[in-house]
Length: 295
Image (cartoon, rainbow, N blue to C red; front, side, top):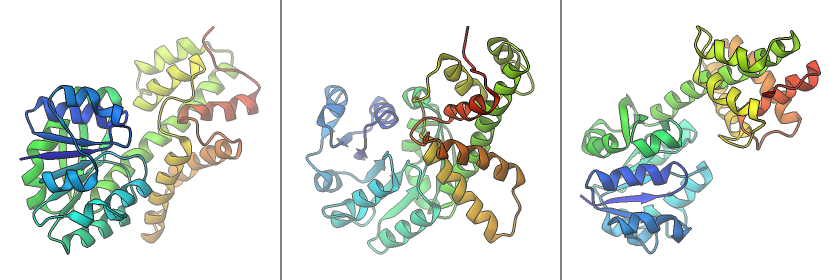
């Protein structure tokens, strides 16, 4: 069963590498030809374009940075839908709006193609290790068909139900993560203002009941003054907006998430949208007149 892979960025390259390692015949495509050189050396084939990849592959995985790119790859001129064949399965491992995933699945279904929204959680290290968590929305039969492929990329793979549900699950996860990052920025800065040593606070919280992945990851970077590593804050805020939209439709109050969003808004107002979530600490540093760094 030939597998196609589109998008060999920081996450995609590791995921594609594990597909090769698992023995699947792999075709790869990225606008940066050099991104695929090591995979080709290990036996993958370089597709000339999306049409070439689609013509030779039954299963196609997308690992792309933005919804607009996913839409162009699927439905743009010479996109995958142009040469789609009945029975193909397209697996989108990026993060997009749930409504987009539902609409894409409906459009491709008319061509006899199954579309699964299968966003992942885990950093580049887990992508390289093949230990990602993958949450999947879409047709159950298509999910079962490509499960061996998903297992090659992830350690925990869960079918969440209908199209769009994978993205809804990812956004639920992201909001919990985003809240913990906002709490880290707020409380670690306050601790320093109160005269505590930031490194010692980080050590205690990292081994205590207040521990979270968001605290561990971004507090370490903040103490080093590194704010560019990670998902851009503006994109994280968009994920929260989508969840708030859905909550509003259900008339469900989200006071904790709403409170965290205020910190994101303050950070965006300061022009920090392209920096990672740890940069929220700069908001509280300015307000409290301290700097949170390792001594």
